[in-house]
Length: 512
Image (cartoon, rainbow, N blue to C red; front, top):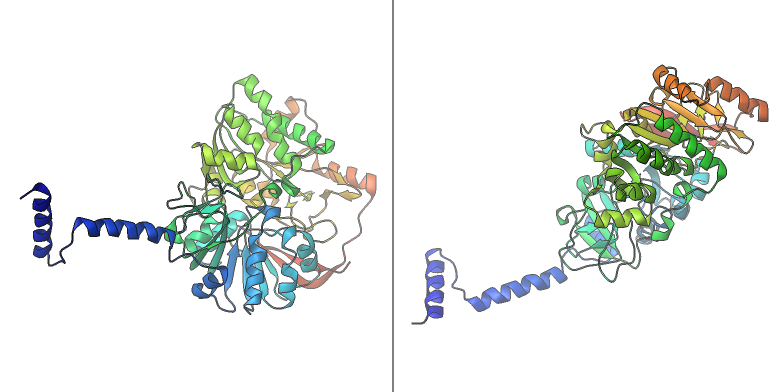
């Protein structure tokens, strides 16, 4: 008896002892082939309509989306158009943020497909219509950290999450980049979608690059995914770095960025191993590149940069000036490609980024944050959501999260925008409480919160122009006078939530 037959006989004998059917090596080979074929025809693969039907979505439920493609997003409109076609009504839309591109939602609100919205921000025609009273139910605004906390606690329950991914395999291992030859889009970090993937009842991945199993490394695991839908396009990567996160060439923004950099260098927090984040807005984003030379001159390196990661931060990281990048949203293609290729560039969920309920969230370890503002008042309260005309035109983002948790929060804004003052008696809408704000940088001078006298003293010693915030307000009024009161109506169109889940402020409809 040869060795092969001896082995088969042993296999058969063992199978009989275990009460199992006899099998041979040919069957083993067929099993492996079946497994490989199953990977190509995963039961999770579906058309969008099939995925929606199989998800169990019903009228009155909550659907969610993320905004990593920002102005280039194509997922929200694609999905809600299909839901309207299928006859769904009375749905709640929970998006991490909504952009100009989402104007088609107006018609779906009018027709009753969407009857409530929860988000961090609104822009464009959609924001304009909602500001004028389009919806019967007020929009609920949460910070990015607040949204993550609300999802984790169940306060914001998501029935079906629709997540756009730059690549996915048939089982749902998905991420915001792709190494395949067929790659169409790249958005980088999927941080704001990760709480949805973890806590939603059903998760649908939409991708324009379906790659062979296994798609690694991945941001979202197959174990959290119910359906995978291949579509023509999930987003236009070229439109990520636009609008509020553009690389500014505005001379005033550059001046403000340079002033903010001087505040950082002389604040007492510019020490080896410091950590930093910049918010959206041209001046706050640009401030990073103006501290570079000071870091080189003083031999100072940052331990990490946090939040929306930009090409400027990637450059400092590659030069060895920033050790690690912690990325909840990649603000441009350079950042997205860095996340794909650099093991020291870490992707984090919104909860790990800024949740007040997450003991290890990165904002708790943040030294310096530079943020923008639409308005600051004489109590250092900040508004980043409602414009001087009463129209919603921005997003809360991580503004109150980072300001509250950082050791030093710096707000950068011009004294005037056209004929509109940015330093006022009282902000139109309260987003970040003054107790969380340390320094306000304008082109006319720098105001320091009276609660931080040591910071004011350091800046004065460095020769910076430190002024009282009341002086800034009066200076603005001397130039343009006292603005007229806005013609707000009585209808509440928005509710601003605090990080702890309480109501911070409300937004009334504008009649102008």
